[in-house]
Length: 240
Image (tube, rainbow, N blue to C red; front, side, top):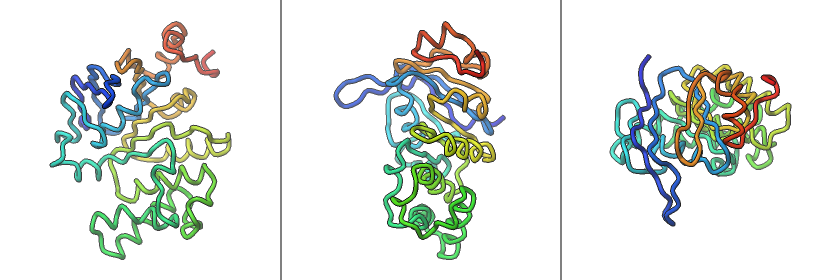
């Protein structure tokens, strides 16, 4: 398998001096679905923000064999689509269509190409019928799917999602999981939803205090009661 993300010795501290990542070593291969789990404050979101250059720490980070730096940011942000936990951080245009069309427009696509890309992405997430609705009038589940569409419209090869199921009702959660199942993309998902991890992911990385504690197959990691409880997590119900 082709290695598409390679991290060696990544450290990061916030401007106030708070350490967030410490010596992260990690590889992700094409076609994988990787879950990043851990307690609140473990560094999961901080790590995701490094994958398309929104944050920059010390260490070596390559995406598709290119260093993540200002010279490669345009290329990397086309390849790696980041979906924030709160869709309001991603949606800022008046209508759903305009939100999804924004990325392709900024890539310099022709008008007909923008329309095709936006409508295809909206159709994929089941929101084509609401293309001209106001984004803030959509339900939270719809907003989360719309945020995913804003990334899909730029044809990424890697989909990075931060807590995609947070605050969703059971029906919206199921709809989102089913949607993610059909994506033929490399997926990296930071989440507390360990049942979703069992359904979607081929590998689990446990992060705590900014360090990789362990990694391995989901059933192996998520059935280890002592390991999970020592990092403020619980065995999912389906494995008890």
